[in-house]
Image (tube, rainbow, N blue to C red; front, side, top):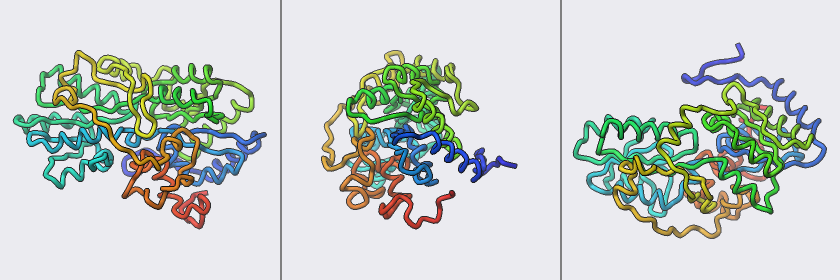
Length: 380
C-alpha cells in the first residue's frame, strides 16, 4: 500500500521516483531564474526538512512569507495575556505552542513560575469544562491563528453566548491570509514571481479572494498540500503558469480544497467576527487583516471585559524578521541568526515558533555553510 496511518494521522508514503519525476519536469520548464513565495510555515518547514530547495537547484529560489500565526502574534498581545494570567481569579488557557512564545515580559510558561494558572488545551471548547469546575474563576482562552482555527474560536464564543456562560472570555489575535498577501504584493520592491497558497487555510476560506489578487498583481498562485510530492506538484503548476504568462489560481490540492471553501465555517466566522486593521509581529499594521469579536458577542472579548489597554513594546532594531517575511532576505542573511537569535532566545517573529522560517533554518541547516551540509536526514 502507498498510504499509511501514523499516530492516527493519515500520511502519504513518499515515493522517490515520483519526487524525481516532478523535479525533472520543473527543471525542464524553467527558462529563467524564478522567485516563488510559500505562505505557510508548514510549507517552509517541509521544504527545508526534505531538502526541496536543493533538489530544485539555483533556478528557483523559495522565499518565505509570514505564514506562521504564532510568529505574527504581536508582543503586546502576548504581554496582555501575561498580565492577565497573573491576576488571582484568572485561569489562562491556550494552545501549547502559544504558551512558549515570549512577549517583552516573557512567555506564559514563564508567568507560570510566578504562580499563574496556565492550562494547555487542544481545543477552545475544552474551556467549558474548566469553567463549570471553577465557577469562582474567570477562564480566558488566548486565541491565535489564521482562517484554519478561526471557526473553532467562533464556535466556542457562540456556544458561550447561546448558553449564557458568563465566566469565559477570549483574548484574540486572529488574522487572515489574503490581506497579508495583498500587503506583500503591494510593495513596489517585491520580487515575487509566483505564490504557493496554503491548502489547510484554503480548505476553510476557499480561493476566490486569491483569484482577485492573482489578477490585480499579475502573479500566479498555486494551492498546495504539505507532503513533498504535493509541494513539488504545486511548484510545477506555478512554474507552468509563470512560463505561460497566466495570472490565475490553480488548485493543486483538489482532494482537500474547493473554490468556495467551507461555507458553514465561513458563515460562522462572519457571524462572530468583524474585520479590522490588525498588527502583525514583524510587519506592522496591515489593513483589514484581522478578526475581532463583534458587538453582539463583545461580552466575551477579554480585552474589553478586563479593560486592557495597548502598550508599546520595544523591539530589537537589529532583527530583520520583517524583511524575511516580505521575501527580501533569507534567514541566514540576518546578523543575529544563530548567534544572538535561536529558538531558545528568539529575537524576532520568525524564530519564535518551530514553523517560522528562521526556526526552520536553524533546525535543519545548523551550519548554514550550505543549506544541506552533511545532513543525513534529507530523504532524496
